Length: 107
Image 1 (cartoon, one colour):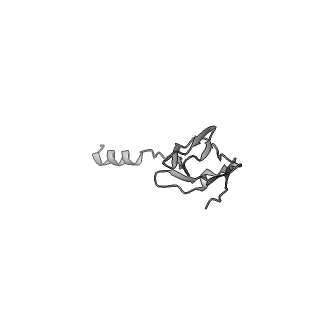
Image 2 (spheres, helix red, strand yellow):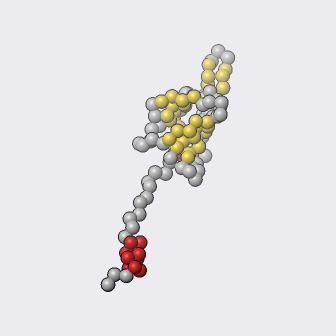
Image 3 (cartoon, helix red, strand yellow):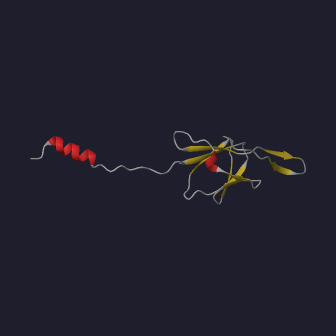
């Protein structure tokens, strides 16, 4: 005889558990308005808001600054929504030299 308790117990113990192996959902590149960077093969310019948020791609492409400096994307903190906040290096204009990129060190 099959009881309701047996059916409930059988159903609960045989549920498959699905896990998501994605840890980074998006990257939020933060910097001075006008700062340039490349993510994947696309070039972006930071708008007046001071940040650009992009969905993470798989496999993870690299990001580089306008000065050619490669950014280690997975070295930055991740928030509870799976967003990594990536600070862009500060750029300064020097008379006669154009834009110059100053390097930074991740935490």
